[in-house]
Amino acid sequence: MTELAYLATIDDAYVREFRASVVALPPGGVVLDRTYFYPTGGGQPCDVGTLASADRPTVDVVDVSKAGPAVVHRLKGGAAGRSGLRVGEEVAGTIDWGRRYRHMRLHTAQHFVSGRIFHRGGQRTRRANFSGTTARLELDGPLAPELVAGVAEDVRVAVEAPRAITIRRLARADWDRHPLSERSGLVPLPPQVDPVRVVDIDGYDLCPCGGTHLRSTGEIGAVAFEPPVPTGDGGGRLVFTLADAPAAARPA
Ligand SMILES: [Zn+2]
Image (cartoon, rainbow, N blue to C red):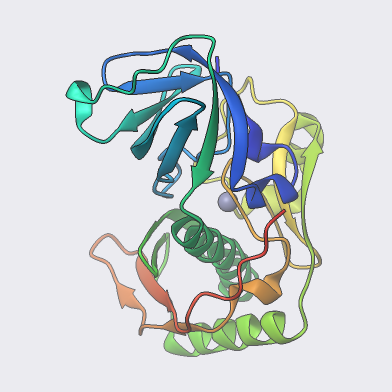
């Protein structure tokens, strides 16, 4: 069982260096008692980085994934990678912050964009994924170019007049009754999820999510939208990219 330490508060998504204990050493991997490395999931790629211990060379973490209740940090060299680590040993983890921060900006922008699309046109987001500086959204209906232009203006306003983003935990019954549960209800939450971890973009959007997000819409920065594309199944696809260099990354 690995504690997903990046989930606790919005600020915990900004932790880039941490200490943890080794609890298992599967071939080529390391399982820690707690981690701030994000494992691949929900359309967001995993973090990469390093693990260091007192008396051995630093090892590169090249992939992070969930395996049941554990998070496995895969080391460079695969199963042949010999970390020399021991169960019970304390390690220092360091996250590749440039990569993580791009994912946080894309992911937070996606929440905001999905919320504004639902508000303006009623289309719901089926899925989204992030890669490099690009986000791809699949909607359950086609998008008019004018709607996308309006959403782009909404993003610009939210960057210039930032809104706070917080993590709330709502009782499942309260979330199921909330009007905004409809906007993100395409993928049903498993029935055992209670309370629900909800990402709250003040005044704009609420969405259940286990990802990493910004503290403020101001950190999204400039984004550029491609023209929306209708998909063969009656849906729509929308792609946007981070248009500027990554904003100054702020540590926790
Ligand atoms: Zn999210």
